[in-house]
Every structure is written in structure tokens, then in C-alpha cells.
Length: 322
Ligand SMILES: Nc1ncnc2c1ncn2[C@@H]1O[C@H](COP(=O)(O)OP(=O)(O)O)[C@@H](O)[C@H]1O
Ligand SMILES: [Mg+2]
Image (cartoon, rainbow, N blue to C red; front, side):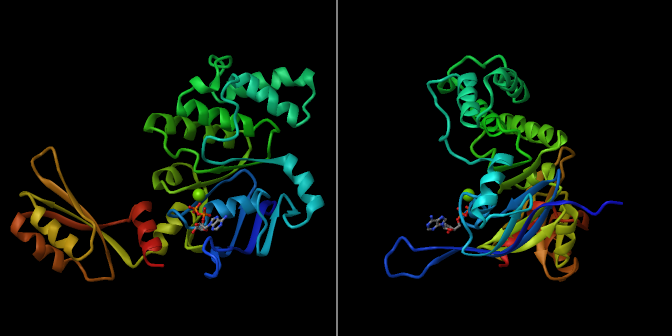
């Protein structure tokens, strides 16, 4: 069997920034991050705001150099200017925000413009642009000005723009941020199709369901450091000190839920269709079920048990504890 081919290897990456405030210490955005990505994977970089996700993805997509550490992308050292020039033809990036498109041009005209920038021959351009519009589901809106696109359509034309050079690796920085659920589902579907077509995808997100749905593997970062890594199930297993407890009661357990909240445990109760109530919460440590049985007994406990944590619960435990 062939050994896995890594298309990205980041080794102890660090990046600091001068503070906005003169005289105050440097800001450490990325504080020693290492990971490897196999060809064809969808790899997630997860973490709360300010964790260092954008900085990491900018280093890997050659927009920013690391202060120290090494990153190899498709074998090219991101510190080697000559190698980087060749590398840029083989990768592309979609960053958040509204920049990077000409709103007064149509989707098709934008793609034609960017294909000129990439030096794609005119005779090939027409076919390539139509193909990309098809891929992102914008064939019908191809000749509408981008300023009239919905946010979801804008995000899809951004992705089409980044596919113009047929990149082997596509970097996506929070690709569904600010999109409504339906539009973000469309974008996730597109990411899945690109991956099925063989593109390696590096994706930052702070939506756990997105990572759970898309990512083969991921790192969770907090304050510039890796606090968790692996597949979804490996990350869940890694937080074995967290138990998630589910209690079903016959009477409204709001008072117990409030008592849990007072201890800093995030619980909420849901009314079930059969007139019962379900409560789920994560606890740290192994304080056992007994204590919670007593806490909920005034509300007539129907069942109580320990369940596997969700990725969200695992994430909160990892990020909160760092
Ligand atoms: N150009 C910059 N100058 C100073 N500080 C920065 C700069 N870019 C990012 N930072 C800081 O570095 C940290 C990580 O930022 P970023 O990588 O954008 O995080 P994320 O994308 O996870 O929200 C933040 O505290 C941010 O304020
Ligand atoms: Mg960011």
C-alpha cells in the first residue's frame, strides 16, 4: 500500500504581530502549530474568534510569512520565494468578506477577468468559465451583475473565482459565515462536490456541525495553540473526562436546570411530545450519576444515562479549558 501523500506539512508555526498600541508587547497570533494534510482530504481548522485560524491559513496560502517554524505546501517551502511563485499557480484561497469581485460586472465577466489574470488562453477561457459557472450552480445567473446576487450566490462566485486556476488545494476561510441555513447548505454541498472531484480543501470554521459534516480530520486551536486534533470520533474520545448526561423527567425540571446553570453547567430542557422533558448537559470529572439523580428526583426521573459527547461539547471542553 502506498504511504499517504501529504500535501501540507506545518511544523511548529509561529506568527507574531506588532501591537496596535505602541510600546505594548507583541501579539502572538499563532503559537507553535503543527499538522499534516493528506491529498484529497477536507481538513478543518476550528477555533473561536481570535484563535489564529485566518493567520494559519494565510501562512499556508503564502499571503503571510511565518515568524518561525516551517510550512511545506505541495512540497514547496513557503519561505522560498522561487518555490512560492510556482506554488501559487497550484493553489487558491477564498477569504471572508466582500472583497475580490467586481460588483458591476456579471458573474461570467468576473470569471473572464480573473482567467485573463491567470493567463488562461482565450480559446480555452469560454469553456472553462462556463464549466465553473455550472459547477457552482450559477449558469442561469451568469449574465446578471454580481451586485444583484444574493449572499449565497456571491459566496459561490467567490469560490468559482478561486477555482479558475484549477487549484490542487483550495483554502476556504469561514466559507459559510453570515449565510442563512439554506445558502450555507448549498455552499457545503459545493465543497463536498469539489472534494469528490479530487481537490484538497482546507477549511476554517467555528461551526461544529459544519466540521462534523465535512471534515475528514481537523485541528482545534485556541489562542494560537492546538488543543485537539484528529477525526470527529478521535476528538470525542480524547475528552473522556467529560460525560454527557441525559435525563428524562415527567415534570418540568426548570428548577434543576437553573441549579446546574448556577454551577456553570450549560443545560436546557426540551419538552418532548409525550409530555415528558429531556435535559442534556456535559460535566467534567467523574462525579457519577447519583448526584444528578438526586437533583432531578423531585421532577420524577423516567431515565438517566451517560451519552457520548457531541463535537460541540468536545470543542467547548477543549477550548474552554485552555
Ligand atoms: N495584522 C495584525 N496585526 C495585529 N494583530 C493581528 C493581526 N492579524 C491578526 N491579529 C491578531 O491575532 C489573533 C489571531 O487572529 P486571526 O488569525 O485573525 O484569528 P481567527 O481567524 O481565528 O479569528 C487575534 O488576536 C488578532 O487580533
Ligand atoms: Mg478569521
